Length: 332
Image 1: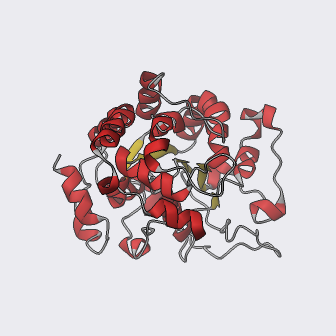
Image 2: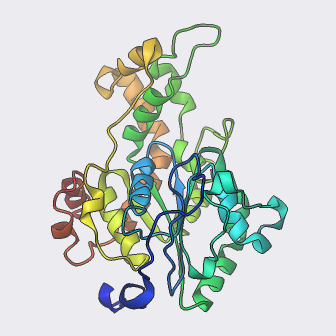
């Protein structure tokens, strides 16, 4: 077992007291990305953010770790992954990574050996995780483990397939070719098979490959993550990430954290919002059941990966709006 959180060196004496904000004269346009936090045992949190699975809420939690006292040395969103690559430039020579002050949040690049770093891979940058990070992940793990028992934690979340499909349809309504109208949901369903399966394997606007081909490969990819969450239980996922990163529970940073569902605005958004499960006829519901079956296998895998709650986590996060869902998921 890992023992109590207080037994970890990072919590005892790894956190130094020079916690002031980024000292650069022109902070990054992406917001506060650097702090003066230096740690005795380095950590790296890699978030693979599949669209519409709650990744924005998880990254919002990451951003809140920069509040005083900060718990990360550096955080990089999906537009700043080059900053992370620059910190380990020898592992990513093909990317020619360069630390850029305006993008990375300061002129001085912190040494990874004294840093707690979080990186988001989202949208197009998921391809960097797949093509660049995964091949060297074992070496990254060894590198951190050999330096003061540092840790690397990878995480992703999966969503219940029907909910995911409807959410993606409303967020990015598909348009009828040559028309200002959107494609009705029943017509789009046959194109939507295996959306999350694709998201685990490929990135980009033309990445999707309808069908269940390579399902086993996507299930294997999911098994490779250290922490796997489900959208309906993000507070437990975050608590588990905290534990793996050797951070103490901090429920204050979860208040009003979880994002409300969003959809496309304007005419297209209004047309898309018309569609719901209740609006589908029997035939379309059969199609829906068919196109969500391979993502359903992934979701079942994810449910089996949802960890038992760390001691006291529900008490500590009692005010989390995501908590009741966690209790339901954990009972499955």
